[in-house]
Length: 80
Image 1 (cartoon, one colour):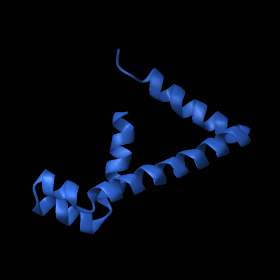
Image 2 (cartoon, rainbow, N blue to C red):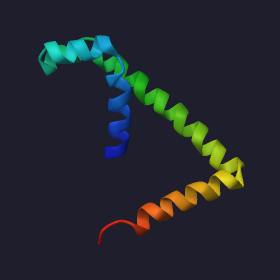
Image 3 (tube, rainbow, N blue to C red):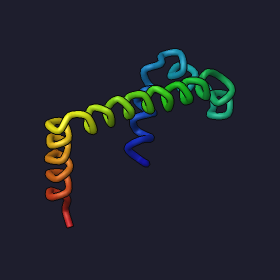
């Protein structure tokens, strides 16, 4: 969930207007501005990206194998 939150935050962070509002207002004021809509848009955009990635993985055995290797390498290199 933390990685997903980072993905969404990065997307929202691309919106200069929202970032200006966040930097120059209290959190309560920022939540009354464009932040909630930008957050919704970022969530929806991430869904499209994940859907696209899922379809590539499921439809292409080479892509699936590449993902499997990356995930395996991440897991094997985790510190115990």
